[in-house]
Length: 431
Image (cartoon, rainbow, N blue to C red; front, side, top):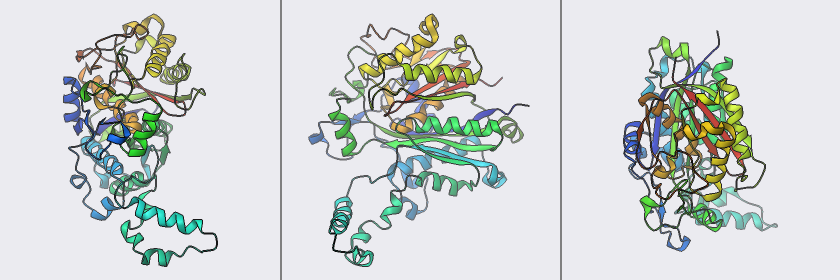
């Protein structure tokens, strides 16, 4: 009998709130989580709005103070989302076979989060290394007090910190992957976990993605590329597929799911949100940060995911679009949907929940498949808010401004990343 991968637990942390209930309530209400940036003074960067997870408190999820100190804030989001998913799925760690319990975690990478202590730590280190005739002395380095400024600073920047702590907290000793992929790592992690379950090497896994794009260097870089919205009204700034859009809004968050083999879930009486039936990735091979105008990369991922799911394109009745709110990307995605679905594209409700959450970075690939699973379970489609002036080249049904009751049997989640990566997940109601 073929093995089937199902979602039995979900966990979300985003600018809309912490937990699935808070996020779903606000998504259905069409509420924006975009506000004036408060984390640091960004006036000189000419970026004043963002999606901050302001109500999140790491201490509610991570009791070990040392773990909090040795990990970046965005890792805290991942740990929390994973624990929320485990609680939602009713997983009892002691009842799991640790060798058959996996972790598949996607992120945008490691690196320092800029803040107090960063220059004091790094500048002397760089200076020491740059003096060719002076051998670097780690003892002296510590004696200077720099190491005390950032204890075990190397550990703090490991790109697999979230994977480690999630595995530690849940006694996960099985198959795993730590995927570094800008914006698409979360969906790739979920797709890889589902494949591991279907091929029989894993019975249960935690999978998803996390990120925070709210760093001065990140805001500065994206703004210099002319990709960010300059709308002075935060809640109206992110306008996917709208004719008056002027760029995306950067954000932070994490989305994690518990994925299980169907019989494994049934044996323990676990709830099932949806089945993961298809997954594919592709590369546009076009440009570092601009999509192919024809949407070729997205088209390829869509076609491959539908083949993997063994379903007809006409079976799709909801799409959670990448929908970042830039003219080039929105139009490319619209062209791709028309290329793949033909006239049926006009009959499929398509929404961009980034209009409310902002761009969660690699966290989007974890959160948006969860939104698809909730939409299937509740038969409600979250809207694309701020859609008031349609772009003639974006002429599909984007579920403007208000949620819609709609029977959903099969849904798609689309993500694109820097470097031309594209992913697509196909989710289906359990039958």
